[in-house]
Structures are given as C-alpha cells and as structure tokens.
Image (cartoon, rainbow, N blue to C red; front, side, top):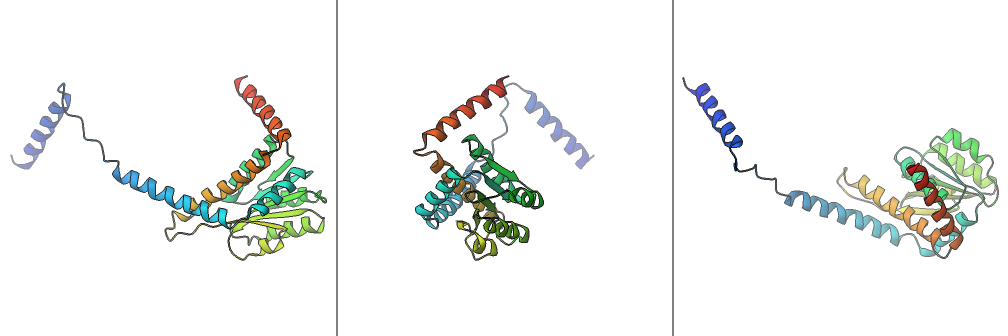
Length: 222
C-alpha cells in the first residue's frame, strides 16, 4: 500500500530491536562540544579575575579590610543582580562577628544609614555606578563621617567619584551572554579575597567564624 505500510514496518522492526536482550544502546552524544565550551568559559572568567586583581592594589584592599574590621557597623547594599552578591557578602561578614546591615531597597537603606557615624562603613555594589538613589546614600554617609566603599565596573561613574575608596571590576567580552558571567565571577572573586583578608592574622575573627559555623550546623541538625 506504499509509504504508510513502510512506516509501520520500520516502526515494528525498531521496537523489536530495542526489546531484544543485548540490543545496542543508543550512542551517547560526544562531550567534545561541551568540553570546549566549558574551557572557553573558564578561560574568560579567569581573564576577568586576573584583570580585576591587577587594577585593585593590595594596599587598597588591605585598607578596606582594616576599615571593615574596625567598623562599628557595615552597611551593604546592591540593587538588581548586585543585590545577590551584596546579600552573600553581608552573610559572610556576619559569620566573622561583624555587624552587617544589609538592605535590598534603597529607601530602607537610606533610613538605616541615618544612624551611620564616624568609623562606620557603607559598602555599595553597583555595576554601572549611576543609580541616583545609591549616590544619594553615599553622600549622606560621607556627610555623617562614615566611609563609603564602592564596587563598580572599571570606568568613570558618579558613585566612584563620591566614594572614599573604590573597588573595581574588569570584565569585557563581545558576547552578550558571556560578559555578565565574567563580571559576576570577577566580582565574587574580589569579595572572596576581601573576606579572606579579614580572616588572615585575625585569630579573634577566625574563632568567631568557627563558633558561628558550629552553631549553624547544630541548627540544621536539630
């Protein structure tokens, strides 16, 4: 009867071959393409992390770490995607016994920042550094005697101009889906480095970290 019968016959043969013991399993897809993509992505992230490290002098990082370590309070804010990194950094500081005040809303942070005094630190994460609300918070804290640390891209921007100290992130790629991944990787590496500096040669912080990690494990096991 032509083509319909041919389709049916092929379908039956295929079903029988798959149901027979010892029938060959479908061939797995080659991992070559995935490996190449993973390697290229790793290289892009590594390049961004290397460039970011090269534009942030060790003495600048050491100074920011000392300021955070000595601060009465550390205020931390980031909007949008920056908010994810800001929240994670606030939690990391808390495990060291540092009073970290985190908000994901500029209006709430403006209210909290009204209590900032000399010696306190305002940590502002903003990729482009052009959000007017965050610039206003930076001015407010500076006027009250606090220290403002901005974390932005390596370009001229209003927030960087207003800050007491600036951390910079370098991540550039023509592929629009790759550049954000590079930025987030370099930003996280920079924050991780700052966290590590807060632990180095600070036994009190390390003791507090160990205690808080034990408490967290006990809460999870309860």
